[in-house]
Image (cartoon, rainbow, N blue to C red; front, side):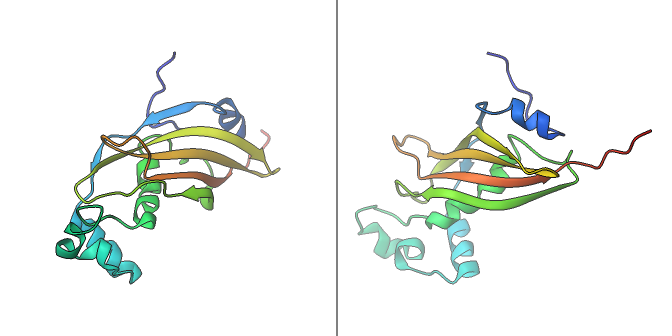
Amino acid sequence: MIELARPLRPRTTADLRELIGADLGATTWHHVTQEDIDRFADLTGDHQWIHVDPVRAAESEFGSTIAHGLFGLSLGPGLMEELIVFDGFAHSLNYGYDKVRFPSPLPVGSRIRMRATVSRVDDLGTAANIVISQRYEREGADKPFCVAEQVARLTEHATHPH
């Protein structure tokens, strides 16, 4: 199998189509701290005890605080930058997510990474949507803590005849 240079930098819709089915690999490992979880709780206003009360959470079935599901998903754009960037396009926008699930908890102190695969490219004429299947892994866990399909909308630079 050919090793893909990272991050990938496609520049055209044709480049995107060539990536359909491509495994983009995995990001480096990142550490989840209580400070990260607390800052996310402050930002979102979600201060449920299982996220922010280490003493009470230690007595729960999880044995510690766990990150919010949306905390894990919110790491996606930054993690994706390790695998693929769209700076060769005139515009790139996060268009949304499909089929988001949180199949297992993300305990504080975990090391995490993301694996990504290009699922499809939808040609929209002057733009295209690329759909990337994301699997957020926790080191040592059998199940991912998040799975999602990210949709990005990309517009090529206008070409001018010479």
